[in-house]
Image (cartoon, rainbow, N blue to C red; front, side):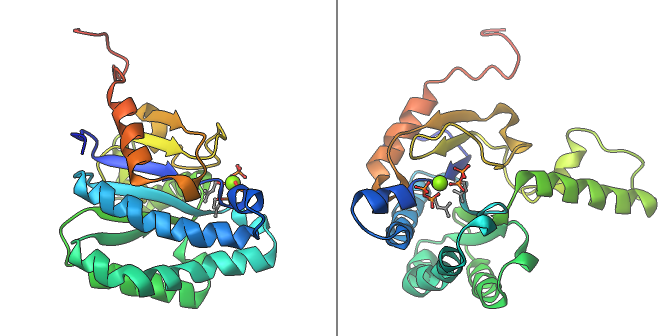
Length: 235
Ligand code: IPE
Ligand code: IPE
Ligand code: MG
């Protein structure tokens, strides 16, 4: 196992549909396989000592997909937690969620809340699902919350540091790196504020084929980057 230096890692889990199609299956087959990959990657990330693993599971734009696919995606948390909650408890992993919980079907929200509550006693890695998440919506929500606090006289302004308290990720360490699978080189409305100084890696492997060893190799590759944060080397 590699020596990991990252505290907060985010992944855009992309390519389920194309992977399934290329194997002559329906897109949903890829999503099902994708859930197994979530388990494998979460366990390896926890073993590597990552503190927060944020996985993009459903975007605010994914509602545009056919209803059948949306419904299937909303059912996957049931399957995931039914199958793996006991193991996550054993591994001391905490489940959390970012995104608009109010916008997802009530029973899906309930299964998430139960998993979040049950695992809240754990002290290991936070496995954070970005669910009904959009970065632009997150920023606008943050602005509105800051306005409420300003009107209540609690603050008179925000700066780039204090504004982070209005984001979903306020309790997490700064985002170190972001990996996107399946070869697309875009952000698709994920963590726009948090990505400011994250290292980005785009890998061609589709999510259903993203193994723990591929994950480690990706982290290894990222660990060689020279992170200067606007400064200069040896400065
Ligand atoms: C990622 O795979 C899963 C979600 C976005 C929910 P996709 O479903 O986007 O698969 P592709 O990118 O169409 O292959
Ligand atoms: C981003 O993938 C969202 C998730 C992985 C949940 P998409 O497949 O929805 O993104 P686009 O449409 O290729 O930008
Ligand atoms: Mg996609």
